[in-house]
Length: 124
Image (cartoon, rainbow, N blue to C red; front, side, top):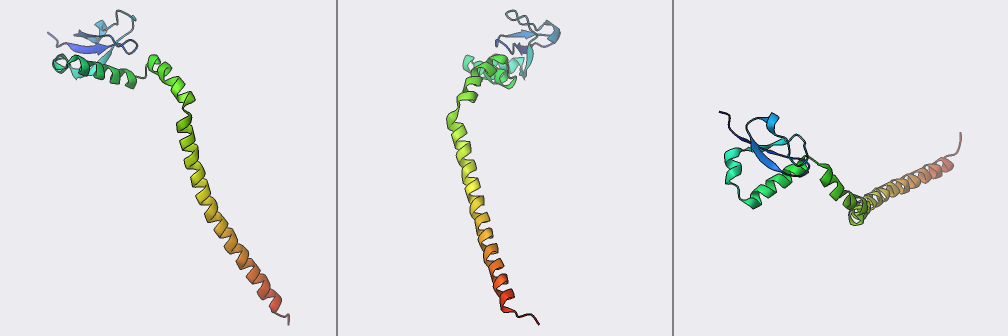
């Protein structure tokens, strides 16, 4: 006899125990269920909170459409994160600008020194 394995539905989170993957079909969604990365014996020893955590993590990892729909408004309207990224980029650009301005000032002085030297030299 085969050992039981734990399968869950990526869409709704329903879980059940089956000996073979071909029997693992969600009764709610009528979709093939995915194997949980934990043995049956370990899963049975988990309490309800631990089971919920494991299933939630697996559903997020499988990036179900439910999770995408929940996260979508956050990604679109997350102005704090966008402002933080842009502020960091502005700081980087300002630092680079200061370095470049220093280089331009140095080159400007160097060119004027060469011009002054060339004017002081009299042609033969």
